[in-house]
Image (cartoon, rainbow, N blue to C red; front, side, top):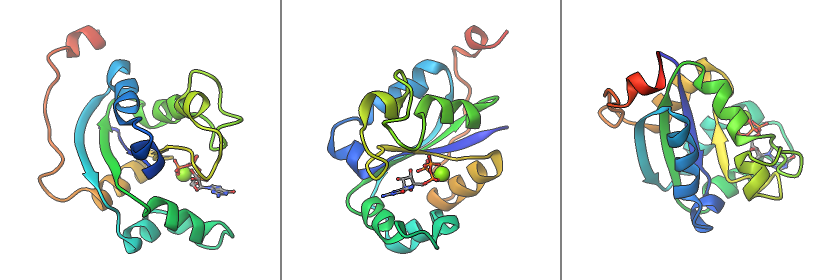
Length: 149
Ligand code: GTP
Ligand code: MG
């Protein structure tokens, strides 16, 4: 099964956008299988964004992600990784299309309110990184037959 790690970043939590952001994935029809409010320690932020370690903005990015609680989510569904990236929109919110989360709710790359995994492999890697054993729940939506023929 394909799964993706979605995270409301500290600005999204502080701005009261948690419900709005969860709602977009929920209404789309994906399956929520993990959810928690969490204060991210520095070492976890660095591990999560390790591919960006050499970038000039890396220290600022780590400060941002650890600056307050985040909301961690695991979502499952056919094509969920690419679809979630489309729902989220471009990294720079000024370039993100209206109708996307960043396009509707943010103005700056350094405060772009939400994260989404960029590949199915990273989806699995990031869910393993952010959730402990037992925090991810396998279940069946009662509405499943109304979502997929
Ligand atoms: P994520 O879903 O958070 O991974 O964003 P992304 O995949 O759209 O972008 P990318 O993985 O390239 O960068 C990760 C995060 O680093 C971005 O979402 C931004 O929060 C931050 N970031 C990327 N580029 C810049 C930059 O040029 N300046 C600043 N301040 N932050 C940046
Ligand atoms: Mg990324």
